[in-house]
Image 1 (cartoon, rainbow, N blue to C red):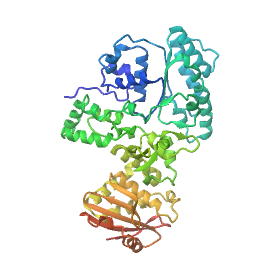
Image 2: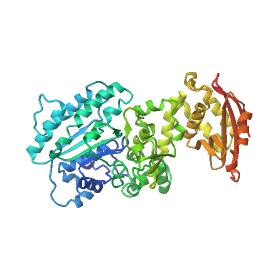
Image 3: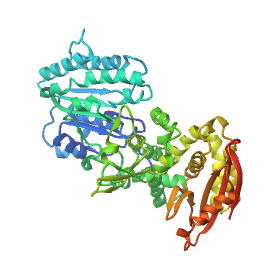
Length: 520
């Protein structure tokens, strides 16, 4: 029986508790947070529960113990709870698309805080307002202040492709955040959250006592849902989803895991489910691409428009901790951006080398990511690609190489000619298009698969079939097949019982179409 009410889109801890929404108790981790330090930064992808975390901290520091009855922290702190002033700023609600908008919006937010503590800030700029409010709130209550700033990076991130405006915002933010550290004698606790940590931004140099816990084992599950939580308090929802779809409960768990699990936020590799998508699936009674449907960040799309990005190399890439911990303002790195925005996650850790292996966390992200790339590289919307993708999927599962190539040819023929302007005589453009299609249909595909004597352009594998695909531009299919034979690309699969296809495909650089094919 399903009578649970899921807080889809609800970010207020008070509302969740008062309206009896499902709440995943993270207060034991919050207790550890507030008792082991006082200045923190936490980075997590969008819709991962950062706002709810700060709302919970707001209620805790405000002494709202009635909201915590029955939760872990209620037993961990049995004595009296003291209420203290809380300065809580949420920067996620504006686009910050014009000069001065950051200052105007922070002025608005601080004015509301000033009213709460009956502090006059007339005639002050936002930097002076912050100082006056914190000092006066401390003086009037006798309690040091808790400062909570949600989505600190939103003004910068929303303008990552508008360098002049971003620089203006950076200077405004630098000035504003620089006043916090000198207020330390008035501050009990300070926490900033965001998606992206911008390296060498003065926020982190001015607030050099700000501890980054984004990769800290102790707090890796402070946002998101763990396997234990899913199998515990959320089991009734899983049972409802199973019944609604006519499948067993174990199958429902397996489906949810494939779709939404797989995130890791430390080298402990503790599995974390995407909370937004998981709650949506339990609420709707079916799985879907819920997180992706809420939108792809504009900054990510801007980066992916660069035709030189090696999309095929993302899966399985190995990087240092420094490579994913922060992003340069001047030259943001795509891999770091993909990790911090949640499109890549940690899948392995080499302690000796302090090196992480990154990959797509789950089916929802992988499928959604590649479907969002097709409009960029192929000029076709998702609705236009679904039909051909389904036909390609059928051909792959049936081992019908002729139908596979026929549908690839039709798809590439439909790409507007102006999107081939970067192609020239190079194979990488066509390789990328085919790679995106194979990833979109959820297949195990490798680009530039290394063998002892070279690299296979595309290797596609299913439970029953292996497809070795060699691409040529303005060449001959005989040369393509000859290269497969000459370099022994099929040798690693000599003892494999699956049926193997050698496919040579040629493209014409003038017509931008598939000109010839040979299948063996």
